[in-house]
Image (cartoon, rainbow, N blue to C red):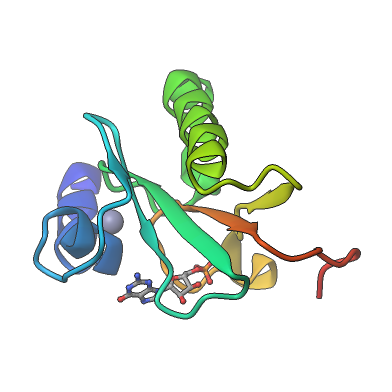
Length: 122
Ligand code: 5GP
Ligand code: ZN
């Protein structure tokens, strides 16, 4: 039942549809585990989204068994930052849950760069 719920969530998920090519996006990077594409509403000159291909609703839904995947997502973020020539620095963000400002319930990293970031974030 829990597994079935997961499949139903994935069928209805925006980023699963993007990964599957059902909603168009510009591919910036892809491997067997991950997919990266530009955010539709960029918050910086460079704004890349990096998602696992498998449906995971948020960081909350991961555990120690996802260590390799989570590490890999960070590897992809670092390599995308090089690819996007963000040598002056960048920010990697995982909005999580309602208070974290998450609006799409499929785990994703934001890679933001091309301008100086502010701290604390809003
Ligand atoms: P969150 O707010 O969940 O951390 O981030 C979701 C991000 O997905 C937002 O920055 C939003 O602009 C982006 N987004 C929403 N819909 C689409 C879409 O259809 N295509 C792309 N490329 N990005 C999207
Ligand atoms: Zn999904």
